[in-house]
Length: 605
Picture 1 (tube, rainbow, N blue to C red):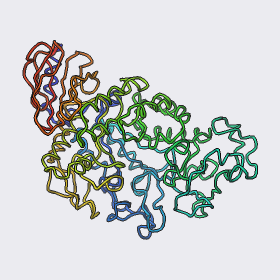
Picture 2 (picture 1 turned 135 degrees about the vertical axis):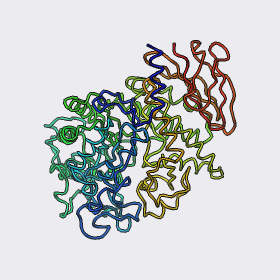
Picture 3 (picture 1 turned 45 degrees about the vertical axis):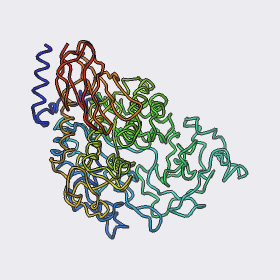
Picture 4 (picture 1 turned 90 degrees about the vertical axis):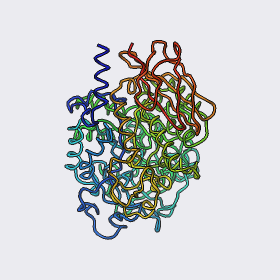
């Protein structure tokens, strides 16, 4: 049986990626770690219907939010365009699509002269509808159905922490920062501070999550005097979201202490997720999206800025709703943004909040500090030692979406260029390819940010990292020097010849055809306190076959022996260059070029 499995694996490796796609009827049975995720902001991907570019609104950019020459406004990408490009995404080797938020957004907000639009999807006004700039409910259904028809999963990006900036405070000028006012100096039972008039009699505190307790919270003027401008009195859907009583109303977060879960994120209206009415309402809202579209998972924005008790109720409700819709492996992963290699910060949200998984920001930081930096490869030892801290240990670590860059912090290539400004284009390319190799072969669920496969190099994070895949009209995008190509973002970026595209395709195919790389236990074989070798073995969960994976983060070649299982006496090269045989029982000689990598399959047991 083992020889048959080996032959089948070799056959699959020789086939085109599209031919390996599991039958559509089987995609629900794949585990989260079986996927290769492709993350896309629909406004920046492809314009399939120019008639919806302005979202049905009239006027200029400040009214419609549409200005394809401005990096902070809508550019015209939509769900029809995304559906039209599914061939491209599948050719890359992706098996799941993380879809940036598609809910109806406030078109434009911001202080005068600093306005931008909700093209990114995180300024929701209607939690029940598709943003007209991106299409219709029918377009969303057509996209999900088309993806499912190809055996591809769809993960929706959802937001619970906040809505668009609609609520204003009388004490602060509209669109300007408003200092956070904490519960000690501004308790719920006094208006405007400890010496203010008594209000909200009978309200105990926000940690008592009963309907009777929150029924006593009727006056929201404990910290500021919130109000809703007349033109926006009923802009939010469902209607209960228009009432300021369901928000914290304490001013802007400092991202520390209590303000982390109670402050307004850059002025966005922070929802009081402690209130049981809010808990029930959000369960209804997002459960309905599962019912209507049968999506396969949720990426949860700003997860760390919501109280744990909310997630303890919300997550089980979503998993139950998914199962009732015939979705057994619904994947929920929260965004816990952090910029250090410290897994404990992430793991606590799987233990306390009960998240099944979180985005692995520590993995991304380890890549930045080693390949886009000078830290030793022991950074990965520190990273993976933390796997034991997650709620289910290595089983949880196996389903953490891993990534090298994103739409908030910036692209990995940007960090490489910034760290090594005098390096040649060839070195920059090799460093980025090394990061891709780690992403697609180590534990976790590899997540590719759209444009990385085309060599995009932004000027920074946030708006500077959200380049168009279709022909861009943004000058600060089009002047970027891309990797692996002489083209610019001024022309469409859906070709399949960039060396990064080809590499990702090959490694994605390798990953999904070798269970050791998706579900296999991982054992560190070598690491250094300086740039250089990092090696691991991963083991097929059924056959026990070893796959040795090695990386060189140094600018000089490496040749040295690495420990392997004594049963692994011969090796087949899956990527890079591998020694055909062990030099001694339990030892194989590795030879890696600068910034090189190798994937070596041991002989079947």
